[in-house]
Image (cartoon, rainbow, N blue to C red; front, side, top):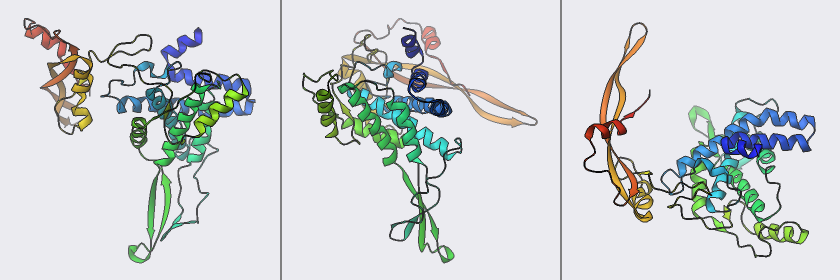
Length: 356
């Protein structure tokens, strides 16, 4: 009960807590010391994964709610993405922190230096050590899956897909060599991309996620060697780069307190604005109209600092600028704001302040 409460309050810290506890039970003090060294990077990586999840699904019906990690009983497309992006975040952060010199036992990946990579170039420089990040993240993240049933196999598969996504989005950077910058030959190395690239890559995989069909006899099984072998064989037929799921997603239009799903009523959507992509422009139709809700337009006053000037010495003084913006929200049909609502009350309720 105490562990469950901790999980509900701080899911990221709970992940680290469980992993370290598990390590204490099965590893020697030497390995435990290593786990303690990497735990802060693991926590930061898991958090970056969830933040990326929120960005990728900001205008979807399922928007990676706070209880996104509490998915032990569901096996949907979204569960697959959460496992993949969290695993990728841990691997990415460990690799990045290795390159920054945070760990004494980790440095550049120079295993291919001096080898010919292609016409006119060879490997060299300081490649980010994704092998290190992959190995350590696998020990942390995969250790949480202690079951041997289809759900555990699905989670482990998607954890691996997340790590493959990091490796698959690595970027080649090159430096030219030659007389007067002629670039006769190049030395190249691999660098981590922005984590947003990993998120975009996995979002595409999410849209093409594959459903794994497990016969009723094996669903939830895992106590016999035969069932474990059958489950392993089933998942091995799918590429480790692809996301997989066992169940279809529930109706995210509707609130489901059991699963921690808030529904789309009250959600903000986008209709107009510069630089909106097609997915964002259609968000009101997707979140409101297709869920049986109406779109309500609300005016809000945005207050922000502007025309800032530096005064010697040493202060910055700014003016307060006000701008009226239009926002759109999903509401029950017939439940729009009444016409008799006072303008003063509406202005008070909708005023937004931007902190600087």
